[in-house]
Image (cartoon, rainbow, N blue to C red; front, side, top):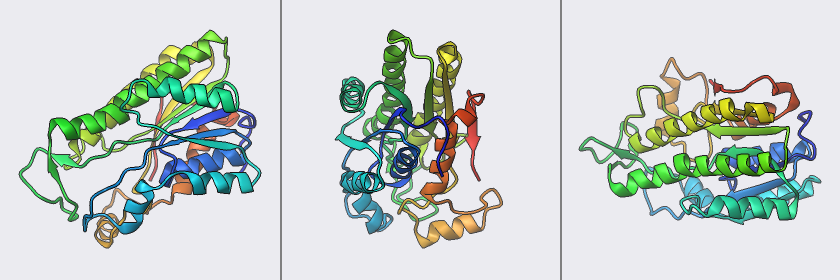
Length: 271
C-alpha cells in the first residue's frame, strides 16, 4: 500500500534490522520515503526460551532489508548504532541528512529489552528465562527505550525548528500497560517513559507541524514466539490474534501519512 504525503519525506527507523522495524522501513520506502535504518547486533546467549530464528535476527545486520528496499526501487541506508550512547542521535541525523536530506519522520522502534523481575523466580509463566532486576537490566531498558527515544525526539525537534520545518511525524512503539508489566518490569517502565515523552512532544511541537503518536502492538510474530506463547494468546480474551510485523508497520505508515494529519497525542492500541 502506498500512503499519501510520505513520498520524499526522509525517515529514520530505529531497530530496523528485523521485525516491526524492518517491516516499517519497507512500508515507508514503498511509499517513497528515503529511509535510514539503524540497528545494533545483539548476540544473545543460548537460551531454550528464545527461538534460534529470533536470536539470529537480533544478531544480524540490516543488509537483507536494505537489499529488499533497493530491489523494489526504494532508497535506504543503514547505520549500526547504540542508543545507550548519548552521542548517537546527532550521528544518526547527520548520516540521514548527508545521504538524503532533512529528516521529517522519526520512528522510535529500537529496544534494549532485557526481561527482569522483582520476584524470586528463574522463569516466567511462559517458560522464558527471568533475571532479578539489577542496575544492568534497568539501565539496558531505560537507556534505549526511554532516554534513547527522548534524545532522538530532541535532536529531531532541534533540527526541525532550526530550519523552519512545517511538517513532521514522530511514532514510538510501546508495550505493557497502566499496571506495569509483570516479569518485564524494567521494559514496561521504559516504555511508559517513552509514551510520556511522545505525548509531551505532541503538545510542545504541534505548533511546528509535528504530530507525535505511539503504537501499542498486539503480540507480534517477530520470530520470538514459542508454542507456549501462542497457546497463551489463544486462551486470553484480551488478545484477538497474533499479528504480523507488516500489519503493525501499516499502522505506523498511516500515522506518518497526510491522512493522519489530525491524529496526535494518541496511544493507538492494536488488537
